Amino acid sequence: MPWVSTVRRRPTWSRAVGVKRFVCERRVARRGASVSVTAVFEVGAALLGACVGSFLNVVIWRLPQEDPRRRSLGGRSKCPHCGTQIRWHDNLPIVGWLLLRGRARCCGKGIAIRYPLVEALTAALFYALAVWPPFGPVLVATAAGATAIDGAAATALALHATFVALLVACTFIDFDTQLLPDALTKPGMACGLFGGFWPGVAGVVTDDPSTPRALNTLLASVIGLVVGAGVTWLIRAAGSRIFRREAMGLGDVKFLGMIGAFLGWQGALLSLFVGCVAGALIGGLLALRRGFGLKIPFGPYLALGGLVALFAQAPILELLFVRWPEWQRTSPNAQWFLLVLAVLSLSALFVLVRRGRRAG
Ligand SMILES: [Zn+2]
Image 1 (spheres, rainbow, N blue to C red):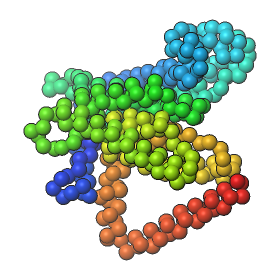
Image 2: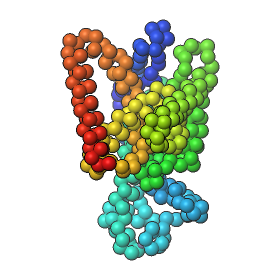
Image 3: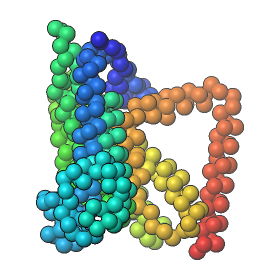
Image 4: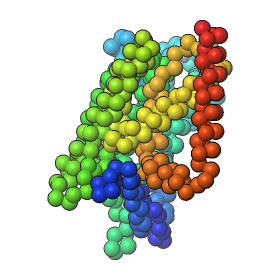
């Protein structure tokens, strides 16, 4: 049974009207794949996500280890308390933890709830990728009415799945160690550049049809990497000048370079923006509850920004650059709204600074 879905295309900046005018093309595409095939595809993506999440738990635990022998990703999993090899059925994603009720079979010690949560999170993200593929639908109908796989969309989906997995792994390693390992961010950059070359996950630089497509999309990816890393590096340099201490690590610079290679420069800037807003909100709330001085890693907020940009880049950019200015021009209450917003954020800042003084 064919059904209709809206497919978002990558945003393009119209040159004729200048960069202020953001054009978002919406295209209604027929997604003719049968409902049952689509359902199998989506559930399969979630199951694969749970297994990848299980592997990510291994990466998160082993990659930051000092001892190079313990850093290797091969070999069977062992109980971190007593070193007994874990049986395969106890190691099943999510289900294993539920059946054991969070206690290791070998020594009865507790297994952190974070393990099934990472698996469930990855499963949910893979499911979201299958249901709302950012590049376009993977299953398409042929003229004969059968279901076919779109090669470019399938490759883009695999690359986006890798991207999401990298974001999850980096987030939890940053929570644990305040570091974003080069062993993940550098291959991530290479992956993003490959996806820029083909099928073009970072969008295009120019709408001029005479430019070779591969060059056009690869350039978008390279510019995304340079802008993402460059802007973060500038903020880091300014932050260390002003606050006389390192506000961000070099890991954050490479991490945002990786995000830019996947999402293009608009996506990189949007990720940074969302990361800063979320960091200020959540960091502020945490500081109010537990006092200042605690180290909060920035990587998880950037990863959150990367996810928001991956799934909702086009509507957010449209809201910021088309709808918002339009509303400001037409609505008589816009100034009052801005005034209230400014007063609220200033008072929030004031409260935070005063609490910080008292705590320090
Ligand atoms: Zn044990």
